[in-house]
Length: 74
Image 1: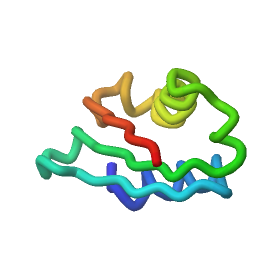
Image 2: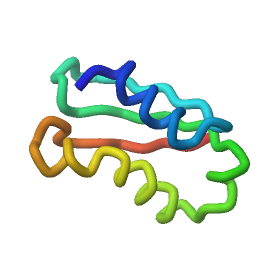
Image 3: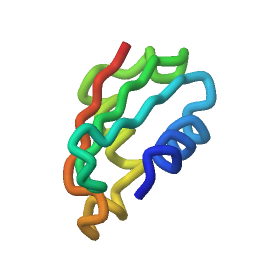
Image 4: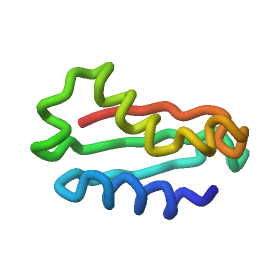
């Protein structure tokens, strides 16, 4: 999965948020997601936010296309 595709999926699901996805190890399956919370995500606790973002990539996480997803919020 490409970082740009992941960013697009996050911003489509949460249009008032900003996302940047990095592949720091250039492995193609270990990603770091940086999210600037919009109003919708501001309402969520840290655990709820992580679950919401992880849920967007559930299929890829189960298939192994995405092996690791680190989420950082601003």
